[in-house]
Length: 185
Image 1 (cartoon, rainbow, N blue to C red):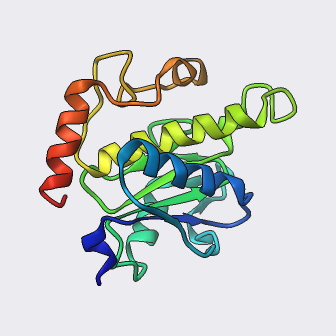
Image 2 (cartoon, rainbow, N blue to C red):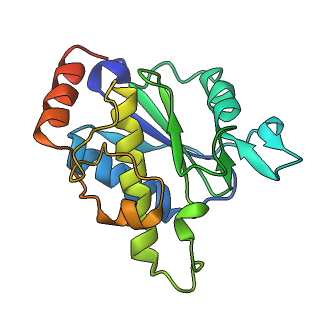
């Protein structure tokens, strides 16, 4: 049977990513979105997406490179990196997804900030990664940013804002998500 019809979300480590990060994200996708999620084999980081002037990876270019990969059997895919990513209009981003697309991107790099991994417990890093992944997957299902500050689809540009968000969508975003899922989007 085609995995796409089963609604499987592929979690793909890109580059040097600790094993636990993608597993935590997969568990949250299954637990919170009611979708089966599988951690797939690791791939090399798309080196062509490195901006040598900024010494960061361009998230938009990385998503374009990922879209070209042959993963047609998966409903949605989440690339997990441990490098600093950006969009030209932002100094950095925690994740990125094309609205209604197939691939999302989660970066663990900035989630370890502002005091570095020695000052933030590992559990906080993985909670943040799960929130970013669920938020970006929401965009893949055409959810937009929500004005409700107690909704996971609320925009959070700072870690303090991200840490305040719950691990769930508000009732409206949840209804939109369920409708998109039932329509196979």
